Image (cartoon, rainbow, N blue to C red; front, side):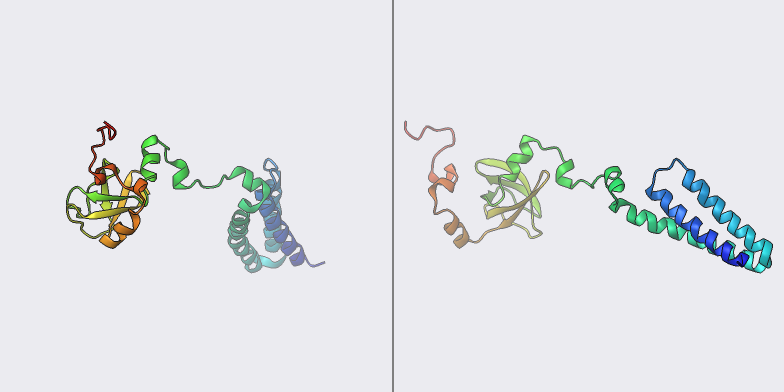
Length: 192
């Protein structure tokens, strides 16, 4: 068999061993065998076919080893061992502390309120008898204009102005209206 074929086979075996080293924890044994195989293949190419073929094998090794490692590392997270080692990236909701204030603010989504200040785009709103700092969706909101809470991100409350006919549709249920809209003080006993 031609020594050039042996050089090519040793180069291929070295690349397979380099890739296998990524997937199998061998304590460096497979890496040592891979480096030995690659070096012996290059030396055989230099020894039997001269400097031209030797440098071609050297260039192939320099290009193909990082490529083989890149492909192996690309597929490593999909292996059972890779899934155990690399954990899933947590979402922003999972890493944010879940305080009672954040829970209370999340319950405001969809609620109606009134702008207590001019919002250009941030300002104060009154929702369910509580004053909250909020941000509009980008448009300015006038003082006293009706608003609806559309989303909450962390402690940032985002609101949108509401038409009067939208307000009439949503306040048909007496239990969903704020107590101030009924002419009662929040601390006043309605039965006294």
